[in-house]
Image (cartoon, rainbow, N blue to C red):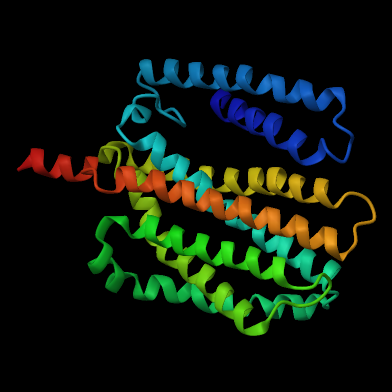
Length: 277
């Protein structure tokens, strides 16, 4: 119970001021909350270490985090879901800058929705080609699609819908890349630890993905709204969206680079099987 409470307080102290601080004018409570994050996080870490030391069942066993490559795997997961901000900001761009209806804005996402489920369906074929680096490859494909959209927005007159042919292709490519990367992402992280820690790390990975959603919306969304300011026109909205796309795409590339450093390392599960033999 103490570990759960401390983990919730730590995340709340981090995420709430990032989401609400900008609109509130960064009041004192927002900075105080951020200052409490390392204190609460340290208390959570110590409580988990003590619980593991007496044979309890901690939410996060410090021994598991000593596994080689696990920290990098969790970083990849954190960077991977920055894509979640794209859906929010693209909808704002379409409705506020291009002035499409909510229904038409939703339909624009259709090529992405086609590409995303197609990625996992063909991933067995691509895995035979790329092997353990398929997740980083998928993230690179995502990044190419996002960089391409930033270019497309930049060359499109503000207030106009980007060229349909390019937009459909780039949205499909982004969704396809995410679909390729997703199946192997969890294995990339869980494979770093021994089987006895797999369930716990699966939960930690799922939590990391959700934290990534909240943080990316808060941070990248904050950058977006800071750039458009008050009474934003179509040009400001387009520019802010371009910047957001570049940040998300760069996050995917960094995640892919980190993923490449661990993708070819033997997993703890494979070492465990070899030792049993």
